[in-house]
Length: 380
Image (cartoon, rainbow, N blue to C red):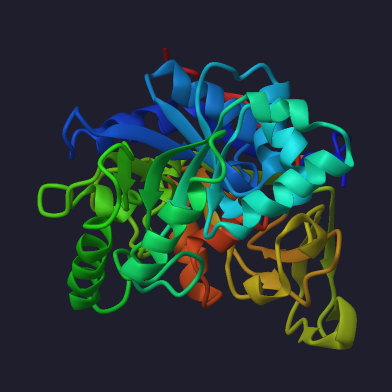
């Protein structure tokens, strides 16, 4: 969907807050650790290109994304001379674009390279093999997602790689599944598996990394070469605690405005399915935000903020609009805050996540492209 500029609904992104959050997180680990930041999924809904540039302005050394297309977007926006690691697995048929845009790939086995050579041969682009392809090998220490699980699998990978001299194996990584929720002792289980797997990784493989935002706070006990900073950079706590115990500042506000207001008599129904019935005369406002924008029906019980007052959503949330009950008449054009600060009151992403039985990641990633992103407050 294209952004809808002709209505008052906006996601306002404070890039200065993102930069400050990065510096706050970096204070918790050694300066020797390289910082990569997650700008996948449109920077968790915050705007990939703008967030990447803001992070690079404060000294971040690398970026990571989930797909080749996300990496291409950054390159086409002029972000060069910085590594971009694609952490998801890639279809070998896209190998030419990987070379063209100088991306670093994640692999989980030798088969990728054989198929990539076949693709380049078929498309008469074998000359691209004169370049180097930097890769990181995924290892599975307990997430159960992608990656090799056993030392003998890594040894077979090492042997197979001899047939592909154009590959530069620069890193290995894993992802701990319980650092930000779940049994804490499973961190040690995964750490022990990680150490066992690293014993067979050749010394010339430079980077060995496991730390997401949560693990970045624990690097004194669990060392890493790269810290991969994600959700914390956006001022959201991975365990949905609000306020964040580390003093991070939410970077995203989601706002709109009243576009219609009316006084409704008692006994009138509001919205689809006639699920809400007025009990007395009520002021009902219509707001141009709905589930097509990422404000889903399961957010029904989360109050919005109008002039510092909490106002309940009444009736079912529509695709493009929703209705709220006001304590009194407010004029058309009055700001309505879904996420963020409003006259001394605050709606935090984590608050909504708890109400909707989800996580903050899903809330911000779910804000659709129809909602314009407005970026403000860059600090150099």
